[in-house]
Amino acid sequence: MHRDIVQEATVKTFHLHDGNPAELIFRVPFSTDNPYGGELYVVGVDCMTGNLISENNDGNRNSLRYLHLTIEELATIHKVITTKDYTINQLV
Image (cartoon, rainbow, N blue to C red; front, side, top):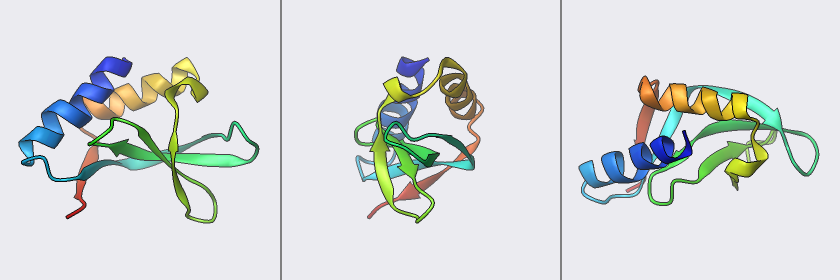
């Protein structure tokens, strides 16, 4: 599942947009427990690195490691990616 997510973000999307920085932004973000306390929202995937993008309640964005997710959360992201239930946000 991890491989499919990263390939969709980096290889298929990043290269199709001429290598311009972009993000896959989920149409419906979901919440997860912050490994350091509190709640985070998984909002997308960075197309340059394949890292997950998270946002806290204050709107601050950060990277989230895949190992902090449950298998169910990883499956949710995989479904979003494979069904293309996201928008592409160009960062030019």
